[in-house]
Length: 358
View 1 (cartoon, rainbow, N blue to C red):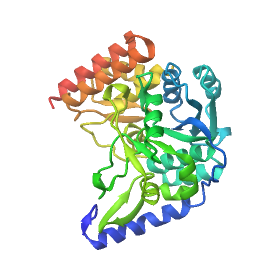
View 2 (cartoon, rainbow, N blue to C red):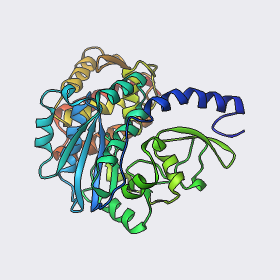
View 3 (tube, rainbow, N blue to C red):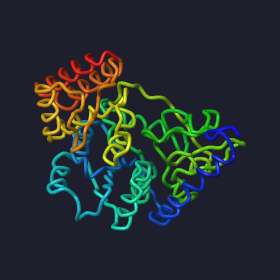
View 4 (tube, rainbow, N blue to C red):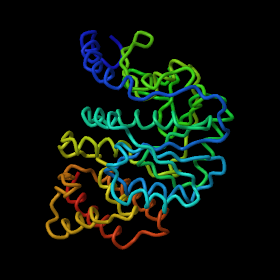
């Protein structure tokens, strides 16, 4: 059998394993067709209440952007309103500047099911689907929580490209992996601009969740909104400049897995050391200070991290060079310079990684 799974039995086993998850999620999100959508676009960000400072940092950067066609920013938090961190709404209000920001929350049932499954893709699908269903504009830009825009014209340019293309889904590259090929012309969800009018008319939210199906004889695991694209058959793409944003791939998923007790072994290319940087720039410096003190006192590779232990003993020097450059670029974009606290943190981690000899 071609595709992700080596044989028919592995394919069927994967489908059977996924089915109970899909059954639990099927009716948790709904939307209605759009009757009179507004022009312009809405930015939808799936936010984690456990990482409020990351949302604040993102808004601080977005406030500096040139977004004349943006009508609304929707922040979807992964828990009910009564469980939000104290003072977060006020911090968001301060960070947003003149941007029209709407905060949406999971219902009790949505939160309970997501917490029971505890899989990053559930949160991404649910948060984005809730935001798409609440959008009043025809176009929606799906923005990752840990993707920090540093080019002030980035959002506006992506919207213009998507609008002018006439495509219902417009991303930065064709998806490749899990049995899916670039020739299938399904675009990645990263910073994707979609036509919410088309999507809400032709698909249901559950169509966007990760599903295991065959495509042209290949056994495929469709990532978020890939199957929705297959239904609509109208996707496009254009690459972005790497300098447009700071986006450590899979950092939120790595964080979710770590908190859930998965992937606790040392990872050569973990991006989690950037998380305290995000939090520091969002106004919460304790995690960064805690790791800094640990490195000064012991130099041990097992870093105290959000109540867990982050082992960087296998991190490679090549990966750290990239990670540090991204951290410094973000510090300059957010605050105009790299603070002394951030510089010290990065220097100590550089010494730690170099000592790995990897």
